[in-house]
Image 1 (cartoon, rainbow, N blue to C red):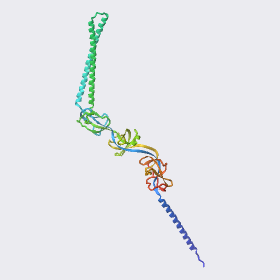
Image 2 (cartoon, rainbow, N blue to C red):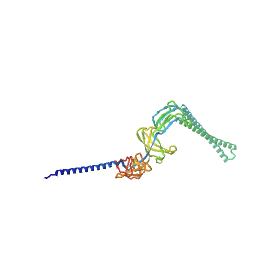
Image 3 (cartoon, rainbow, N blue to C red):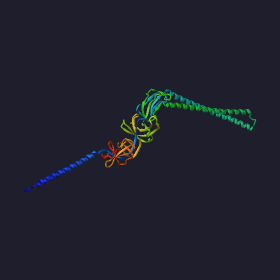
Image 4 (cartoon, helix red, strand yellow):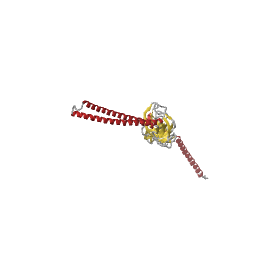
Length: 409
């Protein structure tokens, strides 16, 4: 009897092949799963590259605006305010009349001075006439004496000696009268000069009755009103009341306390940026002057920055911040601040090789700002460094690299 086993055998072989295929797929899937698990076990770290950047260091100093100059306008002479032509907030120009005083006795002084000048001029005229008369008398007496002297020389004894002596005496007396007349004229001229000087003094005081602006500015205070009695503003009378207060606000001052460490880097003429937070605007300024002396109590040096204010947008008393540049490093190799590990005794960074291996590298730092720090040694341009948290990272560790973090310049 014959038995056909071909169908059964084929089925058995097919089942065996399927089992082997399934086993192979299972092994492949397991291997892939194990590889993915191993990859997932590696730490994922954010990185960036060390790159070149222009670095600068600024010191932020705060001060309040002050007028470029400010003055209380006083009266040189005492009197009543006849009129006052300005009020608080008015803009005035140099030489503009702000107020006038009334001093009744000043007019009398001017009239008295004019009369004294007229009197002195009259005395000069009288003295001049007296001099001319004395000179004429002297000329006649001198001529008579010379004639008698000539006759006496030609004919001795013809003229009595007494007559000669009398002629000579008249000549000497006339000459003395000429000298006296000249002295009188000189005295009259001196009186005239004194009278004119006195009138000029009174006129000068009279001019002080008009109060004018010494510079372009803004009236910031008004002390007096029409009819107010104003005392003379002299040093010995400190209670004298001013008329108005005038401030020059088209140019303002900022007096900055520059720290001792930055004093050597302050230069006159340097431009600075002035930030006024209350206005939300920046204004240009210029280092105009500095005291050249460090205050012992604060270890700072007063440095003045002039800020133009033609539109009077800025008001004295406003606070402002000034970024004073104290150092610069153009094209410096730099990394972000959070790439630097400052813990411990040395400063270091964590670099990552192309194969993803961590290396801890000591570095020497230089200038830094609020975002970047200069690396003077330890890194090369283009090196990949870890930024952010470095907890758990060790030298030689294999890591995964996250997308590069762009360095902010």
